[in-house]
Amino acid sequence: MRTRSRRWSAARAILATAVAATLAVSGCSMEGARSVNTTGQNAIIRAFAGEPQNGLVPTNTNEQMGGRILRALFTGLYEYKADGALELANAEAVDTTDNKHFTVKLKRDWKFTDGTPVKASNYVRAWNFGANVKNLQLQQDFFAAIDGFEDVSKKGSAVEDMRGLKVVDDYTFTIDLTEPNIDFKLGLGHYPFMPLPDVFFTEGKDKFGQNPIGNGQYKLTQWRHNVQADLVRNDDYKGEKPKNGGLSFIFYATQDAAYTDLGSGNLDVMEILPPSAQRSYKKVLGDRAMERSTAQTQAFSIPEYLDHFRYDEEGRLRRQAISMSINRPLIIDKVFFGSRKPALEFTARSIPGWNGDIPGNENVKYNPEKAKQLWAQANAIRPWTGSFQFAYNTDGGHQTWVEAVCNQIKNTLGIDALPKPYATFKQIRTEVTAKSLTSGARTGWQADYPSLLNFLGPQYLSTGSSNDAVYANPEFDAKIRAAEQAVDQTTSNRLANEAQEILLRDLPIIPLWDYFAVGARGEGVQSALTWNGEADYANTTKG
Image (cartoon, rainbow, N blue to C red; front, side, top):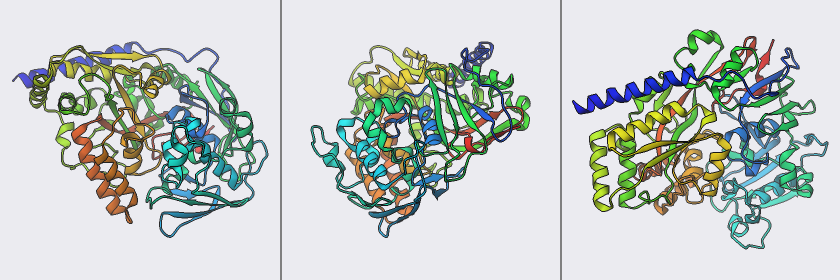
């Protein structure tokens, strides 16, 4: 009876918060952020976005607000189509017989938007820059498979270049890995592997990052920080050209403000809806709603350095107890009205190899009585002190569900669980990156390419570029390395899911749900969501 009563109280708290959020809808975007409404083949598409964390350098961007702009400005050896399929782009061919040695041949007529040709050296120099420890690039770990990475990535190393990269001629280069890697080619469409023009190496990353020169479908015309970034179609692009004249990424303080602008004709497309719109969007939007199962997950990390949450017996017990305190289906029903799926592991259902029956996944299922037992066991090791805080960004539409999660933890465990709001995504990411955050934190993952290993490697390897929880487990690292070296995809997926058994025990993050994404387009706008949940910007039309 007490369990049923507790669930009913949690539902009331969720609904009350959702109503409050609905009444608090903001009415407009930032002053001056709106672009002129245009239609036809040269229409400028006004898209929802947020201020990027850093300058727009491919090897130093590991968050989606900067990432969506980079994908418009740069094209790599491959590109991902709307369904996630890998297709050659700037490369004529990428040949390998063993997933260890690759020969890359480039198309010869591609240019950067400053008119200089895209050559093999532009790839090799860019990747060496990204891997070199002295450049402190956030996406450094993506180059870890290349032979010689260890030499350039060591602190204090004087080695500049990885021996596994060799320029053969202007349009040919080779890649040698230290060992076979089944995922390496699949990842080559991701933006850390984009080429950089010669000017990058003369003017430096800081200046270049404010006004990047790419080789992609669009080129940047202006970046008004905290307001918007304007891009126009690159008419010299040698690949498939956009079906519109450009993009204005408008940086909103809240999703509610963006949704209001969409309704009033001041925004053309947004790939996510605020919680306040989840109940009514089908009636309000009709066929202007965009829906798709996507490769995205939501979770929250608990950094290893927080008191009581080390990767020891006490820490594991507390992480498991917190996870079992959360009634994911109830929040999905009451806040998202069914547009999410409860997490059963650490990847997304839309990814090949997803498995909802991995041993240990009872740790991500609601079990309040077991949660209280585990918390008591942890207290027997070391009594709990203080409060549990949960950091989130208020510009992302997260307040309602974060408050619901905190209420459930508080009601189940009898501890003080509090939301910790930050005004912008950039602010919270800055603290997460610096490892200065003093609380748990909302974290999400939008796949870079459609692979289990893309979810598991960057986030949980001890060297992972997005390891928010500062997780380090040699047993897990070894399993992932074995999955990378597998000779076939079935074996690789099996090993990756065995690695997830370790994660389900340690819970460096608390998985919450993966996405059935819901977005929206304005009147007269044609668009769709892609495999990773972004709008298909290049194929979006208006009028």
